[in-house]
Length: 160
Image 1 (tube, rainbow, N blue to C red):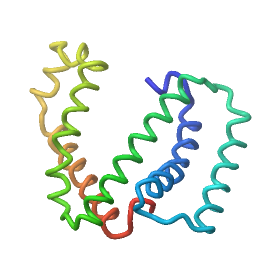
Image 2 (spheres, rainbow, N blue to C red):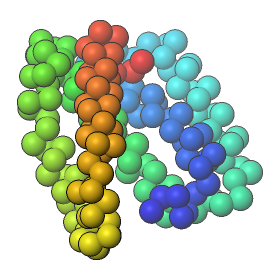
Image 3 (cartoon, rainbow, N blue to C red):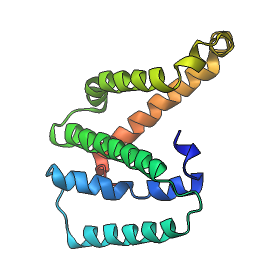
């Protein structure tokens, strides 16, 4: 729904703000210390984003609100993973074990609200049943992406 309110290029520019949100939450939850260098980097990114916002033709407050909520949720997820994988010394699979039930629950809510109608149409359901291989491959690749993300968070921290 976000793509109806903001252009793809503007969304990509706003995604560049995610390190700012992650740093704020890391400092808030005392998982990182705010240094002068980090503060300068955050300030430069913020100024660049403000400059980019001035000339956005599809600027929408509703789109911005959706984007901010999405960025905050993603940042919270990264900070939570850093807490589990770093300070709690969990392994990658253990981190998934603790977070997957919540991920599944919230994905089911999103699917029920936004995609339930299209999923229950017989032609859409039939696509998956008649040709499952691409869906299985994409699921396996998604699992690989999640494990890779957790590995980066465990090794370098969620700010990278």
